[in-house]
Image (tube, rainbow over all chains, first blue to last red; front, side, top):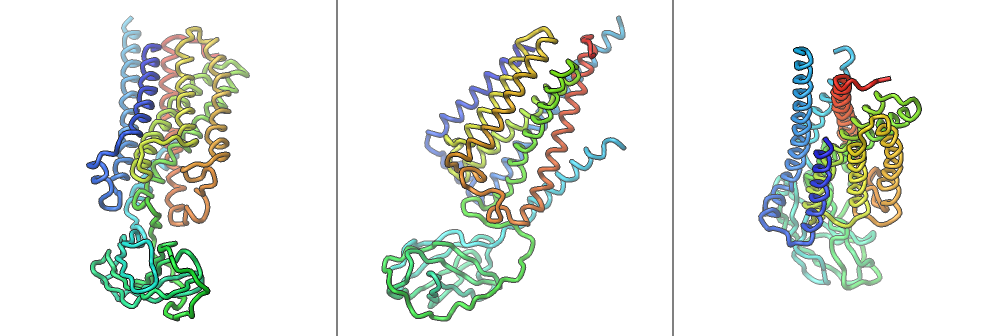
Length: 79
Length: 339
């Protein structure tokens, strides 16, 4: 568990740093093209997608957590 | 189901937000001009519109400089979103900047401070081409803000992430205080569940904000007090989880974490609500940039924004209770004493 949290924290820090370095590089044209067309509606789609993916990630993690609990419960039941 | 009404309400609110928030059209607006300077004499300007229907009627156009009007000598709709306007600009307009006003399909569209006026003077006789017309109440639509365009809809998906995060952190704070008062591990579990759920929303807030910034401010991240504050708060709460993970005795862990949590909350308030207001910030609502003023949030946006906040808070609370219940069973299986 501890290891897992450490990993999570390290990943988060790395991601934030990556975001910072990104800011200094030149903007990729294809992205601008894709996002600026049609009144930037694609930005909204991307944002909604991120939110839904985040919720899905949470659901999967909860699912795994419950599965682990079920397993432990079953083991205890057998013992 | 009886006790779960608020979960259903949360889902219904978000359903409403998705449907109305994504389907409501943007109000027509003037978004781009071919010129930014109008010297005296004949000038031709191409005006780009968004969601406009210039060809549907004969649009009228005029310049407004202070209380003086300069009528367009011609306004030709080339496309629904493109209007070619010709001005015979006189000498001596009073102000440096003129607004461009276009009346089309019974609506007045204004491009504020559209043109710089190089030949300032004592003023001109009013041409009288611009009758002040009150717009009748428009249909239900969102305002078109410069650089935002359709991304104004992100208001319902980015901002409530932070509201929900702050709500969950507040819950966590209350449970931490109760943990310190009566050493009840149930409250400790509630506190950590609220923080980890809050962190989900913090990360969603960071990512959605970054995407939004890229497509409006032109950068994924910028050294702005609000943005850096949000990142700092996220790291502070991540450290809360790391701190918990590093203490094995549950008794010590619960008290230590509770004390840390109180400090984390205080820092969150400082980073979110105090610091960004003390300095300049790009972010709306901070450093003198309005967010909740009439200017930024009109009542059409509000009718979707408030349900969005309520919906996300309810769904966030739901996720938190699920996590808390799982932790409770986990603790029972671990045979932790639960007071």
